[in-house]
Picture 1 (cartoon, rainbow, N blue to C red):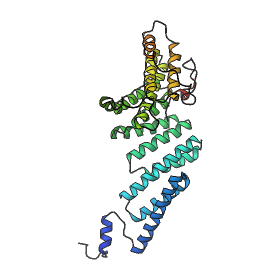
Picture 2 (cartoon, helix red, strand yellow):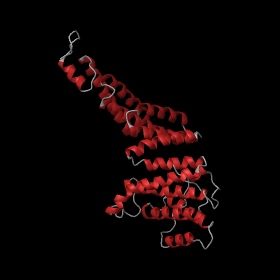
Picture 3 (cartoon, one colour):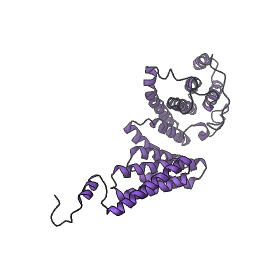
Picture 4 (cartoon, helix red, strand yellow):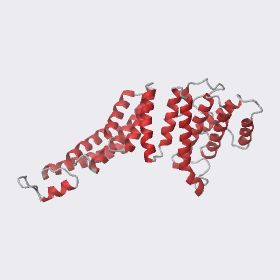
Length: 328
């Protein structure tokens, strides 16, 4: 029962408030609901047409309307925040690729504001903020955001922690912290093997078609695995562990030639890396013999890669670190 002296509310209003809705006069509520439906419809049209500017505007409008209709803790508001956060992150990554750094930063800061309700959204946003700070040369700030994202992902068991470990590896390598970078590359390998192990035991991975198609989830997991092998080997090179580097490159190449499409840039990068490190080892090296034996019978080399990792050459220090390590 309502306390004496307080204005009574219509029964319908009490029910609505119990459903996490804010009491509004029926006419005003109906008008806002109509506006919300229109905004949602326009947002879907913008999403399908790829109009990111309009999509962001409509998602902002939808969130604003929902905050007038529902309490902040409601699923309606939380869902609107998630959709806006996802759109901001997507648009920001596009702007980063276009070198629109200010636009990317503004969108990521907005994403951070609406990501407070979701650990996953915060982790994704902090990963992308780290990419922004790497682009602007603020590597220590990037590490800070990546470590915050990793703490969330490891607490929740999120599979994306492998990618975050790789981003930390690449950033720490730029800071010349090669032992720490190596540890993160190893952690990425462990995490992705935890995901692939059940597939190996069930035989599902073995049934993955040779040269699996891009977009297949298992294909993406194997791609991350190959990148992790590459980054781990690079750090072994920096630490002058050339035999370990050679074996690690070769293992990554074994996976790449088995599962990635012929001509995939990772195959070229890993094969070039194997040949470069082989030249640094004496002919009596056991690692050299083991790698040579493993490579016998493998398919012909894929096209030499460009862009991802760059042309390493024969000198382990010939390229910049950022050209050699792979992260987002």
